[in-house]
Image (cartoon, rainbow, N blue to C red; front, side):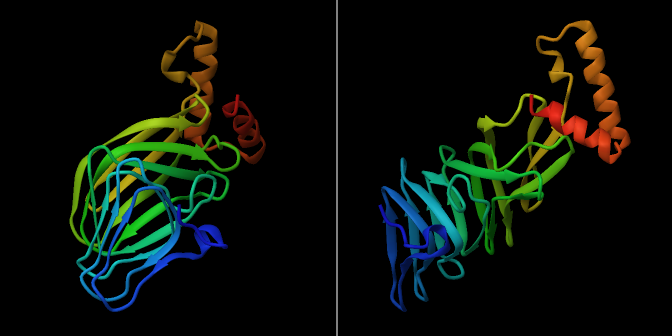
Length: 219
């Protein structure tokens, strides 16, 4: 396990001008700067990389992820800028935090190419909101090859529908309130009320109604 006194805000690993190859088999928390040279970083199966604000491998160098990538660690919203390329296995895992109140979420911004996929685990930082929101969680400065993302653990209320989307150089998470719960276990009357709430969301509620919807969506 490698971490810093500042947690994800500090640097877990700093190198110089040589050719550096780093393998993580445990838990590493913080930013990474491998300097110049032919560098590489491997996050092995079962390992966890709680990345800080920077993963600087150098242009053209590769972060290989077969473990868990979690910007900032669970419970902290952070954007990680990866200088280099990202290559993942289909068995990779991502743990992303979402703050719906401030419309912020974990994100990995890759300056180079991305080959990514795997399981997406989601958790909320703060309360849920009954408003449609979208968050890009991986972006590529170069090409983006989508290996296929699937939802794993989704720690959000059942009245929030979650969908993974991919377009161009961006993989995103779309969240939208659905008070009908897609028809799961509701009576006819409950379904009608849920449908009405959905119509209110689509029309754009006022502040007081929004507060009511925010309360209901947490149930």
